[in-house]
Amino acid sequence: MDKFIIHGGRNLQGVVSVSGAKNASLALMPATILAGGTYKLENTPRLRDVMTMMSLLESMGIAFKFVDNSLTVDSSNITNYEAPYEHVKKMRASIYVLGPLVSRFGFARVSLPGGCAWGPRPVNLHIEGLKKLGADIQLEGGYIVAKARKLKGARILFDISSVGATGNILMAASLAQGATIIENAAMEPEIAALAELLVKMGAHIDGIGTSRIEIEGVGALHPADVTTIPDRIEAGTMLIAAAIAGKPGSKVRIDRCNPKHFGAVTSKLEDAGANLTIGKDFVELEPPNEIRPVNVTTAIYSGFPTDTQAQWIALMSLAKGTSVITDTVYFDRFTHVPELMRLGANITLKENVATVIGQETLTGAKVMSTDLRASASLILAGLAAEGTTEVLRVYHIDRGYEEVEKKLQRLGADIERVAGEEF
Ligand code: EPU
Image 1 (spheres, rainbow, N blue to C red):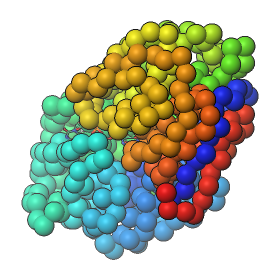
Image 2: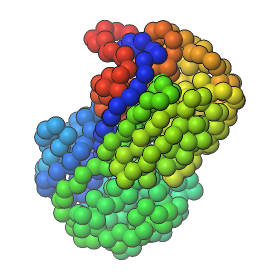
Image 3: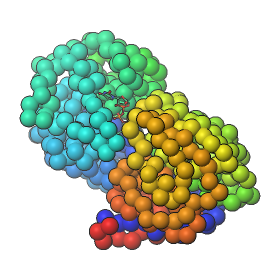
Image 4: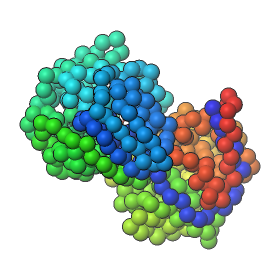
């Protein structure tokens, strides 16, 4: 596995462009199961998770051509309706094949994901939703085996708003017989993007982007082309990088993004003292003279994203005062905390609440993480720390950030990837 070596304290300034959204791509790609043919998914990020989804779909008979960020998908010859454990254990988003497979082919065999680095992350809502649509679902040898002659529309209320379960039911219901209503649906932009693709494919969907989605099933869908939305979490991460490492008076511009998708993060950055100029597809940030402590509680969209919680804790480690960060979406997602403390952060963790007493400085050290966003938070801390920080197991960063070190280098960061050794 590669590692990053960061010499902290360099100023960040300049322009950086945001890539396509990982969590949109991971939903758009399996949607191609629903109708055989050729699709073009533009602005697809070249990420390890996207490659993992490609190899899963390839194992089913789907073919890909990836040129720059343009992904051509040919789903004409699907012959295998299974997602093996080897794929699903690498990436939980593999569960997205379940709904489309059972809806189109009447059969799916998908491994249960098992535990995740930061907690249980169940898939009960996916299973219960598909059962409501009439699928017969059995758990056999660690696999979900779903069968259905023809799915039938139903009213589904999710007890918890779930991105993945909403996506799975959206795809399944698009080919079901009759109407489906999803209450307490996920409103995340990545789910709206999936719904937009389904509409282009001929699906009838109302209430896109709201918590109540109505789908009138159709007999067949057809292929379509789409441009993937920009990654709001990458945009937020880069802004927090600029706030933590940029020197007062400098400016970082985040281009090719949709600021409406991360208003919670820009709002909190302003509270922390950053000066922001927000355009239609860009945000400019001038770092604060002094980082003010700002409490954050994560929530479903359009609240503060759990996927930016770790990065926020890194920023607050250098605030002038004490802040409280609560994760209400994932209670255990704090693997970055002990590692940030190795850099000198003062954090007390009690259940899902982190109390951060801001320090004057952080100091470089060797750190590592087994989680994507936690790794991002360690990089941000390393950029601001005095001395040298080594972030081990960069594998996790490569799952969700396209060329992160090159983008940071362009802003002036001293960050280098050291490849090919076992760290
Ligand atoms: N939940 C259940 N049962 C289920 C499904 C979810 O109890 O069947 C719970 C979860 O345990 C969690 C909450 O519902 O407490 C929300 O989970 P959700 O299903 O919305 O998460 P997800 O679909 O598994 C996606 C993103 C995550 C992101 C979450 C929350 C993808 C591929 N992944 O996961 O992204 O954190 O939504 O916004 O879209 C990341 O990019 O780093 C990442 C982890």
